[in-house]
Length: 476
Image 1 (spheres, rainbow, N blue to C red):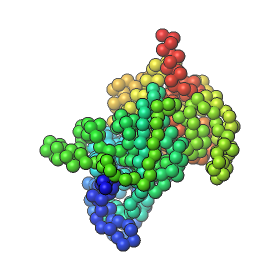
Image 2: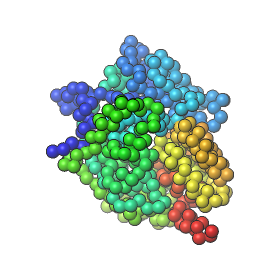
Image 3: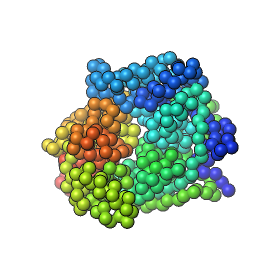
Image 4: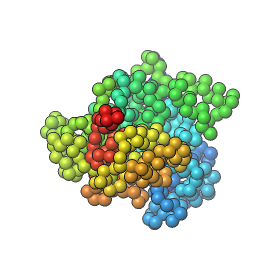
């Protein structure tokens, strides 16, 4: 019987198997942020322990950094303390660090792949659940807790257990107006936020193979919202083409050797999975969440469902509670829901491809954001993405439409910096989570793709981007 991609990577990194079923797993890359690492470093200091492999770590400040004028520093004292602590801890331990004003600063899960810190076959961990993003490269990548961060810093290993394996095969042809984000939301809507609990998901099928690396990262990023431990995609020519140009990728003969090793990073044809899911996206429409969980999702042309329509009694109650929190009613057309703010960015959708897709809608449809939109943010996922977007003139399109063009960072994805929702405010967000208070206390979040967010900004409410583009073409 053949091996799955997950098992190939996992088995190659087992240092020791323990009698209780756990294993000691070697970690190739440890990504360190300012939010979850301070306690680990403090514990190391108190115990007199030292980091083992500084060069296997990369530290980047992203959650707390401001996206406006950084010459004024960070006003919030807690955020400022965490960012300074990361800088100090990195310096004291010889860890490569991209601080707030570094030319390659950005969101860790955007920065690491673009500099080549993420490479196929690796095991990657970080004190952030969306570390799954890196699985797009044929890696085993997942989030860890504070005590595990300390263990990795000191030993470059982790005590863990093998996950079950799930394969999600995406068939059909991805329709115009739909993106990897829509595919991810459709999958979560089908299997639920607990559908992949205890599993590592391998995404497969013609639609997945047809995605760019940016799209694959979006898909793997959202695997956590389905309850998975990790998301993975097999290595292919698209993966290798992306990695070949990265600064930290192997060079010359080392590159040829690496390619040879990475060539087996796929699931064997006779590999057996614990669970199989098949989804055809040929008839997929742009997706919009209506509730307080990514599984509460529908077509942009659809209506809010009746909680009574689900036969799952616990979910029936959660659906009703979500509608109360969101201030919405059963049967309401999604296209009638007016918005207050727009957010394009995050580790899910802050890459150059995402900004291009949103800018294309703004430029094609024309006009400015609707009068009821109080704030529209376009936030690059990294400073490198920002420079590239500006070189392509994308920032001018956003600014002309009434968006604010910001510095790189997590921004409004979560309420840990100055970019947040006020109580009762409603946002179309390209982020990954929409639970109560995620983007600000009392804020109401709807998850969408970048093109759908751009369309919503122009209309002031949710709109079918396909219809907008068709309408514009018919007027020409």
